[in-house]
Every structure is written in C-alpha cells, then in structure tokens.
Image 1 (cartoon, rainbow, N blue to C red):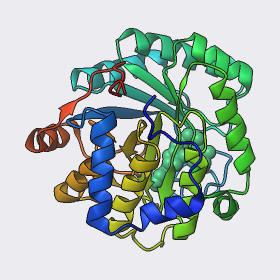
Image 2 (tube, rainbow, N blue to C red):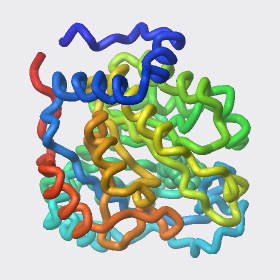
Image 3 (tube, rainbow, N blue to C red):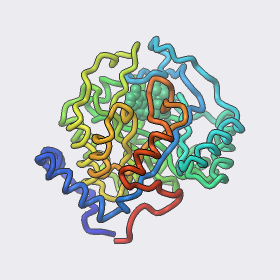
Length: 330
Ligand code: SAM
Ligand code: SF4
C-alpha cells in the first residue's frame, strides 16, 4: 500500500489542504491522481431509476420525496427485462457501471427485493459493474446483494453530521453509518459522498471529508454532487455553488483519499467543458452519462452519451473498462 494513503487526517489538516491557493491545490491533486490512477481514464456510469418517487423520507433536496410537490410522477419498481435492456444499451455506449436507484427509505425482505437481486445477477452477466442505491440495508440484505454479485453500493452521507439534521429528519447520520458498516462486512465496494449547496458551511464540507477519510478502507468511490435545485423542495432557492468551491472539494477529496474514484455527479450538466476539464485535472475520474439527458429523474439533468464521447475525445480521455482495478500497484 502506498504511504500517502492515510486514515488519520485531522480536520485542521484537511482544512489546510482545502484552503491551499487554488492552482497549487489543483497541481497537488493532479500529482496524487497520477500516482494512483491512469489519469487518462474516466469511468462512465449510467444511473437507472428502477423505482421512482413517493419516497417517505424528507430529504430537503430530493425530487422524489412524497412530502414535496415536485411534479415527479411516481413509478413502481421496473420489471427486470426493461432494466436489462437499458443496461445493454448503456454498455454498447461504453458505460462500465450501471447504478440501479430506488426511492426507498430502506430495503424490505419481499418480492421486490428478490426482483432487484435478479436484476443484479442479469446485469452483472452482461459484463458491467452493477451498483445499487436502495436506501438502508441490514447485514443479511447486504449479504444477499453480495451473493447476487453486486459490485458496489451507493449510500451517501451528503454533508456533515451536524448539518445532516437540518436536511433530513426522518433518519440519522448514524443510520447511514450503520448501513455502511453492514456493507463493509461483505465484499461489495462502497460508494459514498456528498452534495454541495445544501446551505452548509465550508467547515461542514471539511467534516464530511474527515468522516470519509477516517473510514478504513476509504470508500472506493466518492461522488461529489452539486445540488440540482428542484422546484417544490425546501432547497429550491439555494444560491448556486461557485465553481471554485466545487473544484476545491474535488481536489481535496482526491488528496485525502488518493486511491478512491472521485465522481463528478449531479450538477455536472451546469458546468462548461473547460470547468469539467479542470475537475478531471484535479482528480475527478468518473461521470454519469445518459441517453435521456436526465440522471435519475428529469429533475436532475445529465449530459448525454454523444456529448460526453465528444468531450472525452477532445480532452484525450478514455472510458475505463469494467472490473479493472483502477489503481496502479504502489
Ligand atoms: N433512496 C436512496 C438513498 O437516499 O440513498 C437512493 C436514491 S438517492 C436519489 C441517491 C443520492 O442522490 C442521494 O443520496 C443524493 O446524494 C443524490 N441526490 C438526490 N437528489 C439530488 C439533487 N437534487 N441534487 C444533487 N444530488 C441529489
Ligand atoms: Fe428518498 Fe433517497 Fe430521495 Fe431521500 S434521497 S427522499 S431517501 S429517494
């Protein structure tokens, strides 16, 4: 293991990294990126909303919470064959990870979960990595997903522990940590990150990075989302996140968790090509792309496959194949 992988980062040290003069910070992050990754590779992921809306949780940013009038039409759990067909099309477009997202508070042990397990098996058999984001999991549910061949599970902490309760009241930070702990008892990789623009302070962002960087091992994948402001939600009128703050967060994540894949996620559609290029330079090495111009629901826009192929070509970046160890041996 490389000697710059650390689990003992102190919040003040992370703050000092984050506050480094911007181009020096990008240079340091780019150097860490090159030490641990093939810096010309980007993983392209496709998110499929397998069950949409009518969620009982009150996440203040989310178009899918039943508590807000967001105009999203609820959709029951998709049938397996539809999901497999979407995954097949995604693979043909170079996608190496398919993420199946459900607007559930938690997984229940029922026929719907059985159907998701079947989806995991069949999409994995196509030769792509499968990630699920289904809400909270028990240990036995995590095991069953692992047995079905699940490659990754996404469960975001979103923000700092202290800011969390102003964003979500229907579950606690500890609930999230418990699911992450259950996942770590399996061989499923962990995808866990946050959202910028929830009204958090810079210190909240540092505290989130500190929580993630103290995990042993670090999450294999760290999504950095920029809030998509959804009309009807309590956060609809939040101010925009300035680009330099997004860049700082990506670079700081890259430096404190150098082996992890850092994913430029929701909000990328708002960034110019030059801004995205700076994010890749600063260590972002994964994106979501889509054939539908929407990431999960139409409330969260996404660039499409063609636009992304063009961008990656222009920047001299390649799509990373699935199941490839993303790290150079140290
Ligand atoms: N219900 C599951 C859960 O909460 O874990 C999975 C689905 S949820 C939509 C997946 C993640 O998308 C959330 O954890 C959040 O970080 C992100 N997300 C949802 N709505 C967003 C928005 N409007 N802007 C940015 N990120 C968003
Ligand atoms: Fe439900 Fe997930 Fe949206 Fe929260 S983020 S309201 S849990 S779908």
